[in-house]
Image (cartoon, rainbow, N blue to C red; front, top):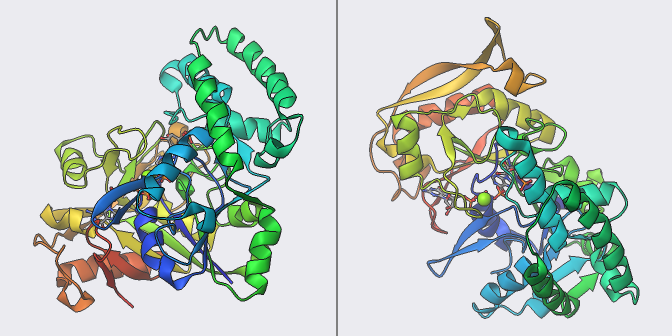
Length: 421
Ligand code: GDP
Ligand code: IMO
Ligand code: MG
């Protein structure tokens, strides 16, 4: 049995906290896509930790964590992350496993990411510059190097061949930066990676499932950043949606039970691209300030706006969402009035569908207004304690989406979460 937790917006919905919260109900937590572009924030013993590639179940004793084949892995970031996690007394030799089919992010992939972004000028994607796009390009272009290749005696030869190809591309971009230091840390980190548990991910996970173990698949980014269904080209380079779980771990679709979608009570986006409900005004500023909306990976300020039910409805459809978790409800505490986007206006016509090319069709949001609760809810422990105005907000969203909100997160802390049903 496999359940999935994934983001329904443009990332940073609070997936890390929610995976950490649910992890105790599972035996295995597995990442199925993305790489160090992700930043998943957890609080362990009241200490903030940001995980980039290691699954968010890692702080629970007895849970096995798998980095699946669908991930692109940067050994340098991984080594750093492993050091942080180990400082909490976690033995990664026991509870972290890496699929041998996982593609490696090379220093030249990071350089290519940077060069490609620079060349795009004001049409840049706003990539995290972690080398994600170029690494997935080498995967689909059938050139990439995988974790399993590390154990092959020809690894260095393969590396040099690919590096040469990258150098030619970098020369085309006229990229001049010296990446020798990046390469040094890369080779050092590879030695570290070799000592970790490298496994055949697909047999590993299917054997766990066969043995009756409960698996939680952890998504990175969000549905609107999906390579196929997101706001292309302003997306990431992987399938962030539930379909990505099968190809990113090697499991069959029948194994998937719940798809738990995480959404903020409002909406944010970091990087370029369309964002119909964005508030480029004081209200947006306030959301950013109260919600502390700064990227966990890059520190960039996140763009903020009201919740977008058209986009959420689309994400529920594409993912087959069975349960919703709403995070950061406490951030709305300070607002006297709230808005919810219930339709898009495109060329004067109302629609409830995501258009083909949002950045060209420029949908205008149609809003329904709600009275804010305007009291502090972050100390509430039960649904009954929540104000009626918040219950009205939640029940409207439930009805619109046809999927229920099962939990409301009302603070970043591990215990700040309320069961709705
Ligand atoms: P992820 O990438 O989806 O895991 O999300 P991030 O960690 O990038 O961003 C979510 C941010 O919101 C983090 O700083 C969390 O600590 C914080 N957070 C998560 N849930 C809540 C919540 O319910 N309320 C508040 N105020 N902060 C939250
Ligand atoms: P988590 O898992 C928010 C965004 C980048 C950029 C676009 C492409 O923490 O929710 P990439 O580096 O993937 O080529 O960047 O996607 N992006 C994210 N935004 N949260 C993330 O991850 C993101 N990962 C990538 O800002 O707009
Ligand atoms: Mg994040």
